[in-house]
Image 1 (cartoon, rainbow, N blue to C red):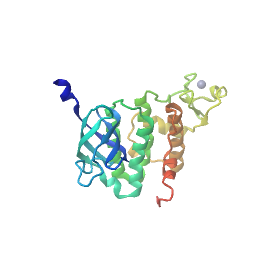
Image 2 (tube, rainbow, N blue to C red):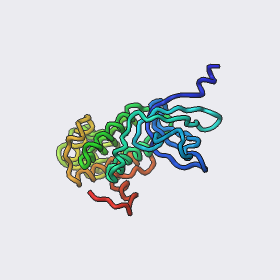
Image 3 (tube, rainbow, N blue to C red):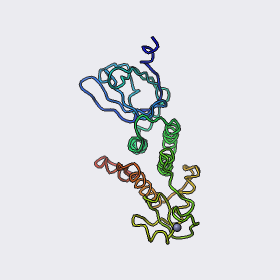
Image 4 (cartoon, rainbow, N blue to C red):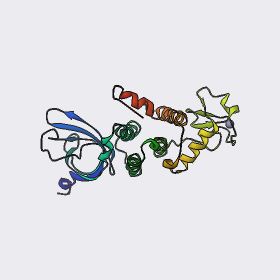
Length: 257
Ligand SMILES: [Zn+2]
């Protein structure tokens, strides 16, 4: 008897993406509290007047009911609890909100729950809704969050090789996993220069400084965003595009800053 009831379960979370599946259904990738990144089939979701309403759209936080049959879990129902749908009212915010979903999708493994990461997405959606342009530091913060929850926080405070405190010039190395001093850098081939101001910004963000109060120049942001994207790419083993790369995917769509 118990087993029969256990075939239905409730969970809460967000939709990362969904695609049409056959004539009537949608295949949905979710990030839920209980399961993390997970897939489910929403039966009948393409029919007019289906029982999902807008709960399968991105930028909602919903309660979902699942049924586990022989194959992939079936999504039975979705009920929106909070909506961030105003992100869809401007192309810029839509892209920014989507970028967080893209990063989550790219970096996170299947069926590994991490509620704190879900909370971070919701938090940064709020930031984007309020801030617009200044939301960019949030992307850096979110990448550091991802690295933290993946267990690959980069070493920032001193040289990762010799542990000496670094003043002035330094390098970033993906294989070494963080900042290296000039003398250790001679032995390391895969590295990029990272200036003192960029290291200070990373230090501030990694200590969970409030990213939305941070003012970055466009080049500071682009440099750091590339470093962190390349670092995640190296660690995850799958291309993690920078914000710049991500926008290029939508070339042809008018984009004004
Ligand atoms: Zn060193």
